[in-house]
Image (tube, rainbow, N blue to C red; front, side):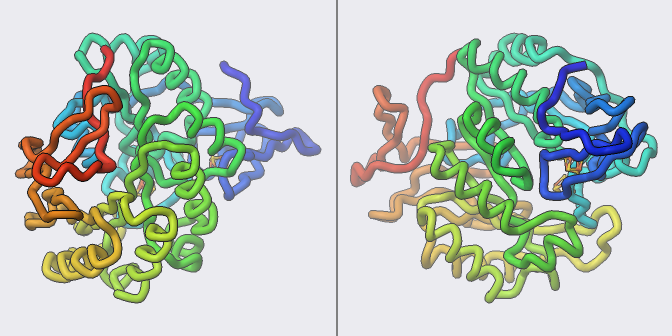
Length: 344
Ligand code: SF4
Ligand code: SF4
């Protein structure tokens, strides 16, 4: 079992997990709130180190990442457990059941090198850590990402971003691109409904941006939770304070897990996206059919990337191969879109 420095010993064989703001106090034989980090005889236990629930090739747009190697494929790696408890979680059967000690879908053990070999065998130059919450498996992620970097592969993190600063720095130093959830802009909602911490997520997004990670952000728009214009405006202001060029995915919610409220109204979602586009250059809708899935040049309005499902047409881009960056084929404006060859 790998050692972890993200636990600290307290009296009477209790451990505190230092990974996320929950700071779980874990008694001997117990588990933290995420269900995947434990205490065995006073030492940190990682019973799910390398336990993988899904290993499959996806379009990178499914993460969603729209400005990072558009049209490419990526090996996606799924885990068990999550430190948040969103009542509308679409992946609740893998994210929530471990913390309740209940049955979960089968997992298979992989060594970090085996994940890299699987990516290479699939012809994928990039690996996504995704589905439930990868960060609660930080020790495995650090080992796997290090192997991937050594093999010349890119690391993609898809996360709720709710992790303490020291661990955040460790993971971001190995991350090439990330899609991070900004679930709402209310500390009360994060604390009372989701089990997270808004300030920690904002700090993680900021840290990712300042570290130079390619960053995209996702918000699931849930009626009566975060779909008010005032709250959306606070998200817009925050993202714009980092950069108006950060792609923002506004996705429609559908009832799942214990949350039974009506689905997001597509017209309202589109209206919110148009509202955000007045400030942010790249705002997309997700989980609905709408014209706001394409990328247009913010300078001349030329169609850069056309998306119909996972059919991606990038003929509006020209590639500066020396730097792997793209320009508008019509007006030549440099774009924050990264493409070019991936090593395999
Ligand atoms: S990562 Fe898990 S065990 Fe650690 S503090 Fe967060 S919820 Fe608790
Ligand atoms: S953070 Fe993601 S995986 Fe975790 S409970 Fe919320 S929606 Fe599910």
